[in-house]
Image (cartoon, one colour):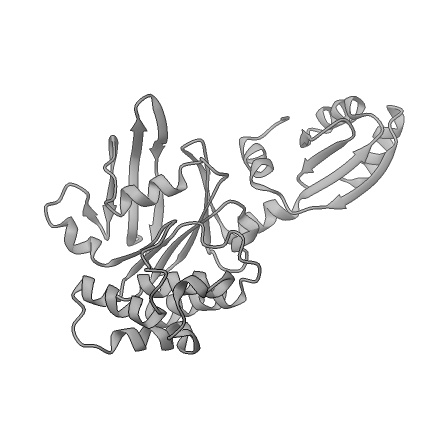
Length: 301
């Protein structure tokens, strides 16, 4: 039986009439990196806030390191969690080292050496005396992760850290090292699955508060590899052919569609020609979250 760092059961969070989380059943196995993907407003951040104790669920339940969320001692396990949310917890005008020392003090971490340990661990020794407001791009992201590491967590919750940082090589390497060397479990959110390619071992795909499906990294890779973008002279004819060939697809605009699966290109072109439809171009494309959701739902969209 798998040991879970986080397990949710019909977890629901409502804000008035709006449902941010709708009966979410997520399974984060210890010692893995889990990528939670979905477009803005899908409920990813809300899920992290609920399981970290920043918000209370409306319905359902969750377990943190197998301890039930209503257990009086749940606070013990919450201290094993490091969180990076939008806004962060750093004081911009202070140096990175001072921010780390401040965080260690707030957490009651004994001794004065943890800040230097974290700087070494994250490869930020050269930035120790830099004001955090001067850190940009990937260094700013890693600095935020460094703050979350001050309490020597067993679980990291990282919310949307990959958006807009350009290169992610050092961040990817850090997360892999934290998992492999320190056995830290990581849940990281992103808007697109391709942001987490090569990092996440398992994915959850969220849409409007619903966890549509959990997939292995291999399953996600296969789905992303099967997106074929096709430009044609007549999408109505294309739609008829797609239905006849039982191919999942999505019409993007008047002359463009995406096809999911592995169509026989020759048969496709011939069938389109029979319908009087010209193929203008074809290209493989990385499946974006919106298209991925449609493909997971199955059928014509």
